[in-house]
Length: 225
Ligand code: SAH
Picture (cartoon, helix red, strand yellow):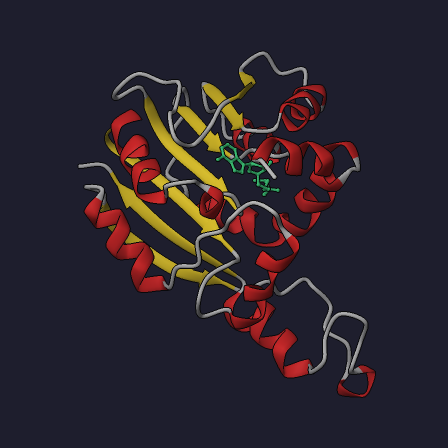
């Protein structure tokens, strides 16, 4: 299935808002670290409901673009705001519809690993970023967070499973300087007491602790030289 078919279906069944709610637990911390300044331009890759840009506008960014491959996601995201300074467009990570050196910061939450070719997507990001611009790449699906690996079996779009060091290496290969890498724990998901396990979704409590409290979201920050 294509990105469009898979994620249009998610958008029309309300999963865009469901993701927003869950991803916000850690995405808000990643967003808080972004060195955005008033008036700057931010691009959100795989924007979903567009919550990241709505949040960044409260910090006075000048312009926000939310790119997504699924038209229904774009339509929903647009309908959740009437802020003229943020706009949503359909596009693919393969070819970003922006000129060279035109974007101050790129953000992406739980989307980068769907890129058909993550290496060329990183090159695209480097191309559109102004010197000194940053890429805040947040993912929950990565090698060290073992219980996430099974997600691929439930999603028709191929996903790239990289480790922390593979992220750093790929950023460097694309010419980005790795300024930071960190796992941001999700301390908000409630983890029931030992006696509640197995639950519908979790065999062992320890796996749930590993997924949320130990790993949570992997944030890799790249800076365009
Ligand atoms: N960032 C949002 C949405 C995450 S879901 C959040 O945190 O909730 C991943 C999103 O990326 C989906 O909306 C999907 O349509 C989009 N996406 C996946 N692969 C893509 C690609 N190759 N090009 C553009 N968008 C893509």
